[in-house]
Image (cartoon, rainbow, N blue to C red; front, side, top):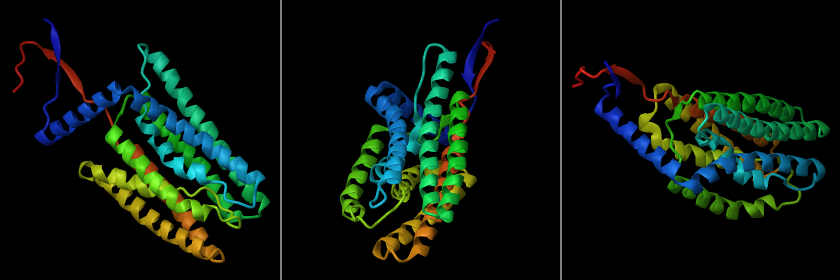
Length: 282
């Protein structure tokens, strides 16, 4: 007797959520521009991060992280890339190469920033960038493994959300350019600006989050809020070094919480079981 695939019974709310995710996935796969953008932007963010690090290593009398500050948000969106071929083996190879490229540039930027702060005898920031290199490695490896295992992300990136993020970045850019133009302000990349936008984007899916995802998101919000406050206090008075250290430390913790939200939101693909044709599903 022949068997036919059938989806497992689900609750109405879960079915509605799955149907919404399937529609969003279909829109994403059919939108060539969105697929190309979501593939290019994370790599671009990693490349710009290393370029800004090299620039700050050579030019120490000005802020060198403006470009990577704006693009940093797209680095975290690498979880929503869509690399598929007719052959699974080729798809796996593309996925590995893609994440390896991101890891090379991101780790390279962390190493360059570490060297810069080593020359400045700034032990605190040396420790932060050493930990950040480990964090980025674990994050990229985790995302790559989930993509290889064909896990589906709970959080969907659609064109409207992407355009909204870009428009908000433009507003922030207009506000921050005068601050970053101060020649006496020597600073590493400020990730909390992009993280501040990112947690607002994640909060749309709060009602679908599990308990641990909600805890991670709340920690994300607390850490990044305190980090932003101390960042602005440091901009007001550059003599308040403790504000810079508090901001940097909590920014790193916020990135860790953000990575946990992204990693924990992956879920296995919808289970499909073969059953006998004579079986009746109610």
